[in-house]
Image (cartoon, rainbow, N blue to C red):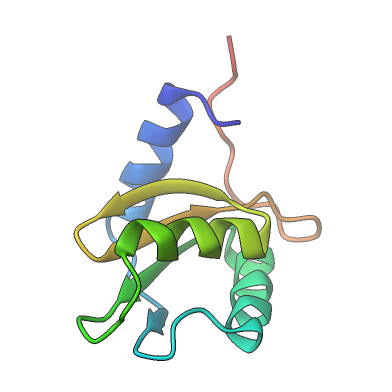
Length: 99
């Protein structure tokens, strides 16, 4: 679990990122989860847009994305989800130390 300080740090890191995935009418698919997992391994922090035509609630979509990718939900703001997962091979983000 991320601390409040770590989430705050990750939110500031994600601020300048552009969404690299979109969840549309079809919802969250297995193929999408695989692609997001790969992106998380490369980048550790990703933004995902939930389109207006999505039929599921944005909270449900955010939870499904986090659970399906085994990542941490950093933020759900508007229709944008921010996910974090520490990379095994491409560690780039140094989180503030837990206290």
